Image: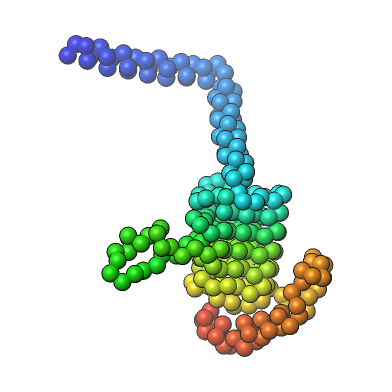
Length: 243
């Protein structure tokens, strides 16, 4: 009993000495506390930068001026392809088990992006858990150029986000998105277009070479399909009334 008491007493005395010593140090040199905090913050920031740089080296492709922020979870980073001037901000989850995720140049995502390239299947007479990761269907996910993805967006297997699109916050993309569309909701739906057809043509003349530009016929076809012929459906979806 005496030994236990002495052991506890020694621990408490060590703690008290450290506490008193720290207060004395702060009294005579308070700037040391600030230096300690700055050093810790700088060290932590450097560790995060080192981790992100190592992660970039593991990517299937990493272009110039690629920005990724912590925290980020990537399964099989070798299946991730980030082109020039792209960004993925923090709290992202990228599940690329056996398929690829590609983000093309000048596109970016706000916080909370989720990419899922896999989809579980079902078989009659087989427990669902026995099929997981064995018969999963894997399909690539592609975000084309000049796309902005809002916060907390989920993009599922096989989806291609068309060039120039804007994806509203918290949208869940289950199907392909046409170029220059504005989409929102779950499931995500086209509710407008970023530019008119004429503006898209002018936009692409400035930014893309002739062979990279989307044809006028495709632009007009998409605009008619998703905007002109769907106005009532869009208003119902957004619960808007006619002016």
